[in-house]
Length: 249
Image 1: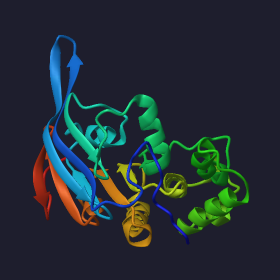
Image 2: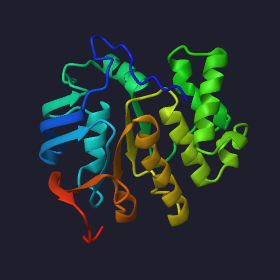
Image 3: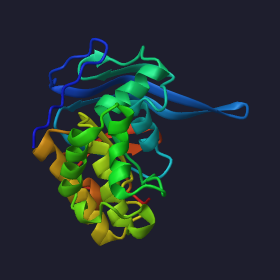
């Protein structure tokens, strides 16, 4: 499979950098009535291109907030975000939309497939948003559905698929536009342990097969330990890399 990961985006590099993501002194505060809630506190992190990195911790510890900031779905209160060696701090909402369309793939716990479309049509959506249609787009959809083992189910709607099958389709949709960065937010949260393990195996294969950088948010140590390294989070802070995790969820 020919995977061209480089794209042109307003002066962004077209060649892979050694550093995929860098966060410096990231803080995120939310208002709750008259009080302020500190969701992220002084996050400093570097992730190299092609790494599979997991973040583990209990609900409410800031894992999803961190992922949303890296995806540009949320903005930090202060601090700096660098992607592929270039600052993302000044990107507008419209520019972030293009960034996600071109260079970032997101996998959610709830799948977010469109019920009225087939599996193949759901996967084709990112290409349509980029204006890519015709035989080349159809070939690309087939390639990624074969990669995730769902080509035989291409004409089925989400309602005709199991949870694991839906997540495989969601992963195909996340990689069809050849992004450099894959962000997975609790992708096994709605799946049984066997199916969840299959999804983690699939995510683990992406850096090896295609050079993706994968960031996984999870509360499951079984899922997290498949990563190259695991960061523990608690109370909005990165507590350090861990090789075992026994804290209650």
